[in-house]
View 1: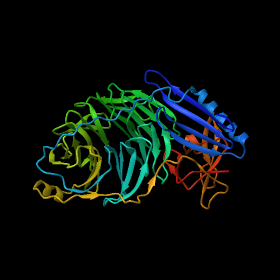
View 2: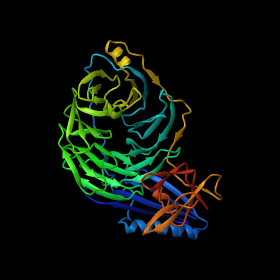
View 3: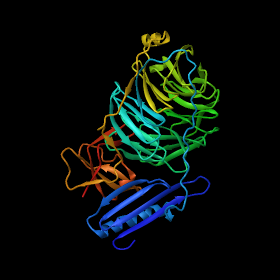
View 4: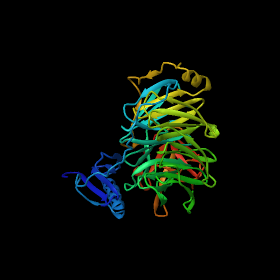
Length: 478
């Protein structure tokens, strides 16, 4: 472009299913704007302001140089097609159950929903349009997060909540303003995610498993014997990978395979307890596998393909949702206790908490079912409550990923200062403020890191993996 505004556009694209990413840097006097993401998408935007035009040009040149060294090359926007994203195709038939589940309330998100997380404070639901809503346990809608692409799943790591999206970005939703905590390589067609102590585990269409650390850096990957891996669960000992050929357990450090167990049918969903993993399959069963050796300990028979499953604490009860809009409850030994219709399509994900079963369904609803013994007995005899249909407030607080990093000239009261430093050839973030271990790295958005730059955050929390997580908005100190 003419004048003081210049733009450099780069792409990293490989034929045959490789990476498909773009990176654009625009310099306008003292402002540097970076736009990046999946080719064909609008992408994310980060803006930084510098004291002089010379500093801005130097920072932009450094960013471009880093990308070129990684294989990016100059390109023309629109010259390459966007990488295809696989969205789960599901069918949902009417339930054959004689009775309907005792639904307490229902919230319709407006699009098919796969993402769910239920904790002691609130309920989370994410849908295919990129909307994530938080609700109270009584169904009150509290807030909405508007993400740039469809939500694959919601996962929790202690009290941090992450949303994995179709564009390969995993957003930290723990503060009001979401930020991109992980960026999954474009050649990984994401099916499911799990996070444990800051380590991200990604299962994909080809039956691959990719493990990324809290610094958003690749650790290791494996290819299981099957494809279409809809299950990944992790604990301190292993990663449990469910795919079309069964469940495979890998050592948590990637050292090798611990065991592999063929399941009755292809795995469509997975759950875990302390000593077992549960695999729901397209052959109408949930199977409980021992984490120690993969032995099948119990089988829970449904009447149609199992789209989702969950357990009460310790596996005391096992729940399953099938492709025919039914929900089941089993005793730990496999005895079927009940089968009821959901009234809202098939459950694509589910979670149990305090005698309530929460499900997200093919019609995009978050449904709360009273799973107490009394309520189920009443439902089986034909007595169910009238579900409360929840509506969003007109002035619902809505939060989107920040497109710029705000700048401040001084540290606000109570703020914690962190600094970008070069370490081992990589740009790390360490804490400068007193009271923190200065050798620990901070989980920090890679897109906003600048060498020598200082930032202020509202809070830092130590993670058991030996790093700090950010809480609150990130601001740059000029």
